[in-house]
Image (cartoon, rainbow, N blue to C red):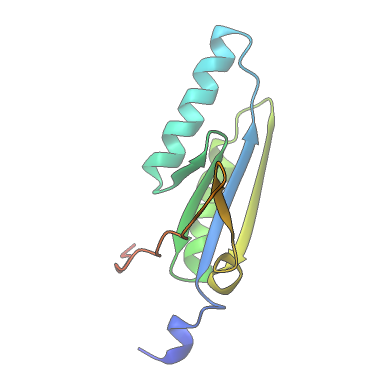
Length: 112
Protein backbone atom coordinates (compact mmCIF):
# COMPACT_ATOMS: atom_id res chain seq x y z
CA UNK A 1 0.00 0.00 0.00
CA UNK A 2 1.53 3.32 -0.99
CA UNK A 3 1.94 6.31 1.30
CA UNK A 4 -0.45 8.26 -0.94
CA UNK A 5 -3.21 5.80 0.00
CA UNK A 6 -2.80 6.67 3.71
CA UNK A 7 -2.23 10.37 3.16
CA UNK A 8 -4.15 12.61 5.62
CA UNK A 9 -5.33 14.64 2.62
CA UNK A 10 -6.91 11.56 0.96
CA UNK A 11 -8.69 10.21 4.04
CA UNK A 12 -12.05 11.94 4.34
CA UNK A 13 -14.68 12.66 6.98
CA UNK A 14 -18.30 13.24 6.05
CA UNK A 15 -20.45 15.47 8.24
CA UNK A 16 -24.22 15.39 7.80
CA UNK A 17 -26.08 18.31 9.37
CA UNK A 18 -29.86 18.37 9.28
CA UNK A 19 -32.87 20.26 10.49
CA UNK A 20 -35.98 18.22 9.76
CA UNK A 21 -39.59 19.09 10.59
CA UNK A 22 -41.17 16.95 13.31
CA UNK A 23 -44.60 18.55 13.65
CA UNK A 24 -46.69 15.71 12.23
CA UNK A 25 -46.47 12.00 12.97
CA UNK A 26 -45.37 11.38 9.36
CA UNK A 27 -42.56 13.96 9.65
CA UNK A 28 -41.35 12.44 12.94
CA UNK A 29 -41.30 9.02 11.31
CA UNK A 30 -39.33 10.35 8.31
CA UNK A 31 -36.82 12.10 10.58
CA UNK A 32 -36.34 8.97 12.70
CA UNK A 33 -35.91 6.85 9.57
CA UNK A 34 -33.26 9.26 8.24
CA UNK A 35 -31.30 9.10 11.51
CA UNK A 36 -31.53 5.29 11.58
CA UNK A 37 -30.31 5.11 7.98
CA UNK A 38 -27.29 7.28 8.83
CA UNK A 39 -26.42 4.89 11.68
CA UNK A 40 -26.83 1.88 9.38
CA UNK A 41 -24.39 3.55 6.93
CA UNK A 42 -21.75 3.71 9.66
CA UNK A 43 -22.26 7.32 10.76
CA UNK A 44 -21.89 8.27 14.42
CA UNK A 45 -23.96 10.92 16.16
CA UNK A 46 -21.73 13.86 17.09
CA UNK A 47 -24.68 16.01 18.18
CA UNK A 48 -28.40 15.39 17.85
CA UNK A 49 -28.62 16.66 14.24
CA UNK A 50 -24.95 16.22 13.30
CA UNK A 51 -23.61 12.85 12.21
CA UNK A 52 -20.07 12.02 11.14
CA UNK A 53 -18.37 9.18 9.27
CA UNK A 54 -14.73 8.30 8.62
CA UNK A 55 -14.00 7.31 5.01
CA UNK A 56 -10.69 5.72 4.04
CA UNK A 57 -10.64 7.46 0.66
CA UNK A 58 -12.34 10.04 -1.51
CA UNK A 59 -14.01 7.21 -3.42
CA UNK A 60 -15.46 5.79 -0.22
CA UNK A 61 -16.72 9.27 0.72
CA UNK A 62 -18.39 9.54 -2.70
CA UNK A 63 -20.19 6.23 -2.15
CA UNK A 64 -21.47 7.23 1.30
CA UNK A 65 -22.45 10.67 0.03
CA UNK A 66 -24.65 9.05 -2.62
CA UNK A 67 -26.24 6.77 -0.01
CA UNK A 68 -27.16 9.76 2.16
CA UNK A 69 -28.48 11.72 -0.82
CA UNK A 70 -30.87 8.87 -1.64
CA UNK A 71 -32.33 9.03 1.90
CA UNK A 72 -32.91 12.79 2.18
CA UNK A 73 -36.49 13.38 3.39
CA UNK A 74 -38.84 15.45 1.20
CA UNK A 75 -38.92 18.32 3.72
CA UNK A 76 -36.30 20.03 5.86
CA UNK A 77 -32.67 20.89 5.32
CA UNK A 78 -29.77 18.46 4.99
CA UNK A 79 -26.19 19.67 4.48
CA UNK A 80 -23.22 17.41 3.82
CA UNK A 81 -19.64 18.53 4.36
CA UNK A 82 -16.51 16.65 3.28
CA UNK A 83 -13.27 17.41 5.10
CA UNK A 84 -9.87 15.77 4.93
CA UNK A 85 -8.45 13.90 7.88
CA UNK A 86 -5.86 16.68 8.17
CA UNK A 87 -8.62 19.31 8.49
CA UNK A 88 -10.62 17.16 10.94
CA UNK A 89 -7.50 16.86 13.09
CA UNK A 90 -7.80 20.59 13.84
CA UNK A 91 -11.26 20.30 15.46
CA UNK A 92 -11.62 21.55 19.02
CA UNK A 93 -14.38 19.99 21.11
CA UNK A 94 -15.76 21.26 24.42
CA UNK A 95 -18.16 19.54 26.78
CA UNK A 96 -19.19 22.30 29.13
CA UNK A 97 -16.02 24.16 30.07
CA UNK A 98 -13.85 21.08 29.64
CA UNK A 99 -11.83 20.69 26.47
CA UNK A 100 -12.24 17.15 25.15
CA UNK A 101 -9.71 15.17 23.16
CA UNK A 102 -10.44 14.33 19.53
CA UNK A 103 -11.73 10.81 19.02
CA UNK A 104 -9.25 8.64 17.16
CA UNK A 105 -9.98 7.56 13.59
CA UNK A 106 -11.04 3.93 13.25
CA UNK A 107 -8.11 1.56 12.86
CA UNK A 108 -9.87 -0.81 10.49
CA UNK A 109 -10.03 -1.52 6.80
CA UNK A 110 -13.24 -0.94 4.91
CA UNK A 111 -14.23 -3.57 2.39
CA UNK A 112 -16.99 -2.66 -0.05
